Amino acid sequence: DIQLTQSPSFLSASVGDRVTITCRASQGISYYLAWYQQKSGKAPKVLIYAASTLQSGVPSRFSGSGSGTEFTLTISSLQPEDFATYFCQQFNSFPLTFGGGTKVEI
Amino acid sequence: EVQLVASGGDLVQPGGSLRLSCAASGFTFSDHYMHWVRQAPGKGLEWVGRIKNKAESYTTEYAASVKGRFIISGDESKNSLYVQMNSLKTEDTAVYYCARAARYGGTYWVDYWGQGTLVTVSS
Image 1 (cartoon, rainbow over the protein chains, first blue to last red):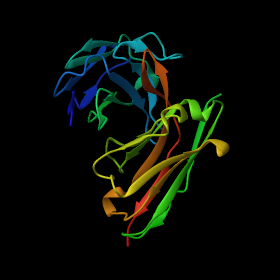
Image 2 (image 1 turned 90 degrees about the vertical axis):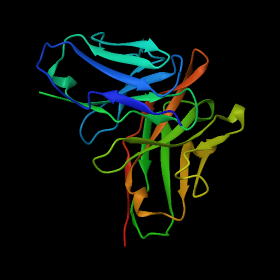
Image 3 (image 1 turned 90 degrees about the horizontal axis):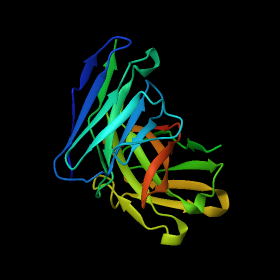
Image 4 (image 1 turned 120 degrees about the vertical axis):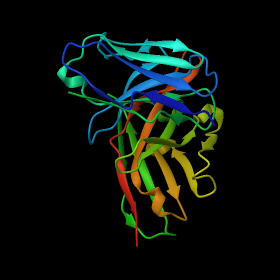
């Protein structure tokens, strides 16, 4: 199975900060990676797919990059509504797997 | 508007069975792949399984942790996705989400999630 390791697992930041979350795959997955945002008690929401394609309706302050084994999700200027947990997921091969999550708090 | 409404979650004893449903609307159900993903209380996300679309014969794939116990199916006439869960274990306790996948650039990516339904396996 492909392991996805997210770092950091916890991040403390302020409104306006630039935030970067990393997702490392245990083997190459090309660009088959998605990013999700999950707020407490809610379903996840798609932010990015194909490593760098912004899902329709997602603010442009979110961006994704990377390929192969290393990927990043960047929030260019953190907004109050961005405080949440972020997960990556690989679609390269079965079983599909998720990273452990990164909680972004004030 | 795409909507996915999961239901059927309940308290069930270990060894028991349960069927979850996911009612889909706002799109043509038979055109899309669908996934089940679960989240144990306070934990991360775990992929459960996926069913392909009608054109690809509703082929399924499962996580090893549920293979042989869970069966994913779809009913085009009811625009609904199901997961039949048998031989339930305490570690199956989780919120279960259904999610739609759409084809972008040759790959089916998850683009919408339902709200989740809670399954508790306990004696």
